[in-house]
Image (tube, rainbow, N blue to C red; front, side, top):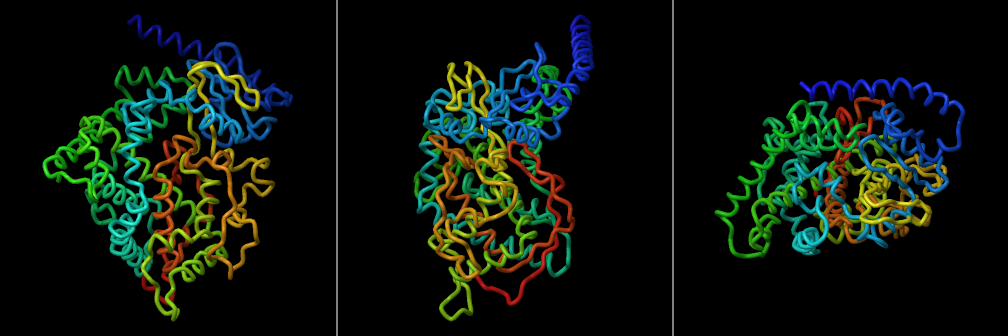
Length: 516
């Protein structure tokens, strides 16, 4: 009874404060106060709760606007019940956080608390020795040899025998398909083969998605909602009472954990005592890791490997559907690299050829600049510090670098920063007859941190590019993707970003047919 009264009084107080400050908030906005342009209005106790609540459905664009008005491209957010959040789109700050003073900006307990129920002690949710040890053993899976094997053993089968026939069928029947969902199924199959050594066969659309996939989606979505909650106390209270979204999260996580543990135990029974040509799970088990730690690491890799590349490809296909000249240039590059000497047949895609496809890589980079698979990433200051732009950081502050906003800063990319222009990644002008063998301009990873940078740079970066090049080249060579809806899709930033409502398209087969 006492607890219920306390909760009621707490919400009554918040409602009163909300009503009281809303009027003041409007007057501050209308007066164009200079302080507003360096961060949202902030008040004692509640911080910027009012502005945060009002903009909770457009946080990305709100942050981007505030950052664009800041002379340092850095703002400070204060929220009730949470430590300060420093958000930056300043490359010098990003380099300081991710490299120069890396050890003072770990993930931190507040971050691991948000994702800890799902990711546990996996590589994306830990710091220090545990992170270093997991990264070391995982790195063996991303050698040049592993990438070549990935093309032959995974991509060839998954693309040529499953993805292409599925799209051909859709083109013949004039069926509307959700390309985002197809690509997510494809990447889930691929990452499961590489990480777990199993084939879930998700590209068979006649079959329902495995419960593990649905549980992954639910768990990642609700976990992401924790990070954007206006008041952190609310989700913590719901977790303590096991109600609402937190109850659903608990059920989804239980299914994910039990499913992966079952796969691990089955693998243990059949594992061969050899590290040659083994998947990540086999290497972890042979190294003698605890089952729970193996589970957590594998879950992290599945989540990252599935959602990031599928999101990047989804947005690229939408962008090139609006820029047919870019699609034509990609197709010409594919032909230049893989067409045989007689110009009648395409050679099989290989590692060396895919590596040279820099125009296609530029298209992927430009797509991820505008629609990064991970819109923001946070660290927490271990000790007091000062960022290169002069922003003071207090111990425990959340420090967030913001790839989505960085891609929209005129100071970084020019006045055309919101336009899709793959040629910005080259020094020379790119023409239809110059698509193969071009040298890309060097761009600092701290200006374009879509794969992080510094010691925690994404291990799977090269594998991601190879996979995306293989898929996009295979599809553009054969099909034209036509969106059903002309409206601009909505970018939704969860743990990894996606297109709201999917990407509904019709698939039109090109002629003549290209044999790869």
